[in-house]
Image (cartoon, rainbow, N blue to C red):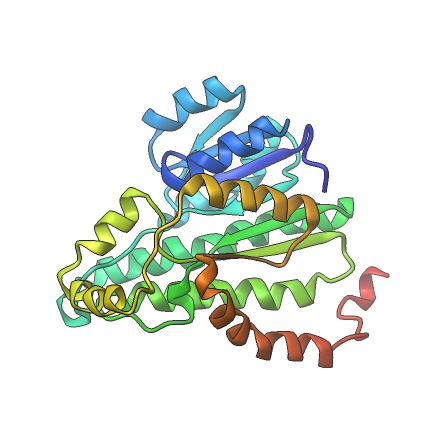
Length: 266
């Protein structure tokens, strides 16, 4: 997809990876639509980039209901939806308040599913669009202290992979980002988790922890949308592990090749 002039909606756009994505797509000539829970940061960023902004708490069912319709009425049809917003937990499961568990699942998994459900009919009708899901290495590697976060990201990855089969040949692409440590505030919080700290020491001794700049992630995401790539993997030293994890999905997709899942639309 040529992103020049396209409308790119990015959730979690106020900082970190989301902010870098906004800058990267804007430099490529796209019109960015920034979404975050508060306006203080995205308002100035949208003005700087010549885009627009909307506030949304993905864990709030009343705010998310009809959100895409409201955005498109103001800004026009969305060409690319980047489900980037996410929050983490950092505790043993029994020490987590149930409200925190619910918030993580809603923000990281249910929210992206609902936004995708809202935006997809228009993309399919236009025969063009792209969906991006910011997932994590935590989707495939069990991590102590992050059990709920891991579950949410595993669900998001499989959602994206399954959706890709559903919408094959509709003109809508899907890219899943499987990311390890990224130089953001979120990773700083994860790294300071007392439970995860014990695992970190082992990972560091094995030289498997290496953080990546969010600017690299943003630029790779831009290229993935332009070239309709299935996946972005970072850090590269985890690429083999991610590829092995993706194998069952690739085989399933191959086994289902040739089946028309949308006969009513032909």
